[in-house]
Image (cartoon, rainbow, N blue to C red; front, side, top):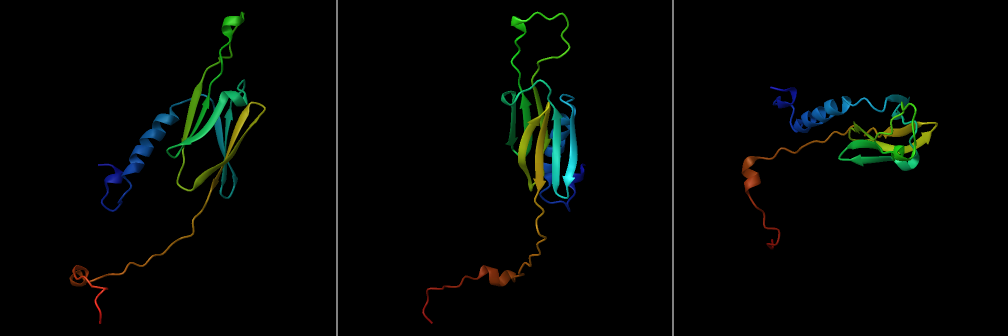
Length: 147
């Protein structure tokens, strides 16, 4: 029995799938990244993408996931390397976004890709639900009848 099968947690079963996706995504090691809090409701993800240009990188949101992809053109066929320690490899790094987190923008600066996020904090809501009698809910009222 998992935490999300608890009868007091209704409608949270999709979180189990999200946690599975997050576990798979955390196994990726390239490229290295930082996540920093830049304000009360602001975050910045910084990826080390040395050697990638803006044309080599894409940032998108897919099904509540921030997906960052990098693809370099391998021009090794035209060059002769004595030593090759810098690989021209592609990557995909995913971050699952909670509801209310928006991507503000992305910038590439000195080999670092910065993706800025903002969390919109909703106002707490209190909603009263009217309790009706089971007898009254079965009755219908004809609104077109003349009084």
